[in-house]
Image 1 (tube, one colour):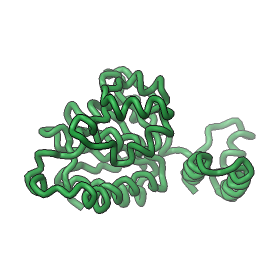
Image 2 (spheres, one colour):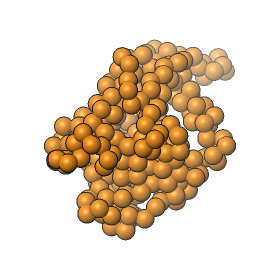
Image 3 (tube, rainbow, N blue to C red):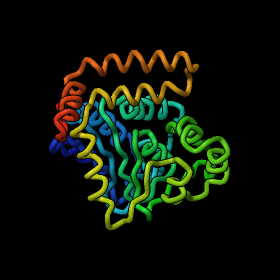
Image 4 (cartoon, helix red, strand yellow):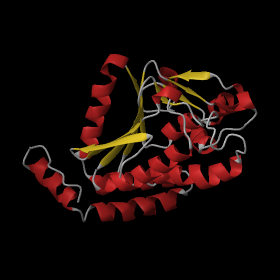
Length: 258
């Protein structure tokens, strides 16, 4: 499928979705949300990891408030329900690992779009901004879900109320993202991270996501039962057998994702 607002490249089991509206800092309009949703569902059929990143100087500046196609009669509830929810679910429920490679500003819904991925890697010059209260809104696009889980209640509340810029290093220190990387090393670094996941035990990664997310709602006994069930599934995979053989033979494992 040809896209108008994003670019999708799949190579060596790595799918890269690049937001391609650099002239508006990759702001999200209706077309872009639909295309991200489609690409996030299509890419895992051919790739073992999916990366989202931005073109130009920004990752994503959030809702395109200058989108003339719907700006005059923007129904925020409908837009969130019908356009943002499918996009965020496609990212969150992706069956393979997802990475947000945050190359620059991630503001408003763009910040929370980044946080929907399994791993967030940002340039040191990037920042995250919950800009919503600056225009009389609350954090949306999953912000009120992701922020307390990643930063804790105190930091999440401050980020939402004050709408201060959070530097990539602060975000890393606070547990909001995985790591902040020097700008000149950023692209090679996230590509290496993506390649590592693309060559790994794909089914085990899927079960890791299920297990860690379940921990927020489960009792200890429920979580232990979930671990046992998922570990049993992992033990039946070819990748587990390959991992054991590679360990015994003192060689690198060659995982197939099966």
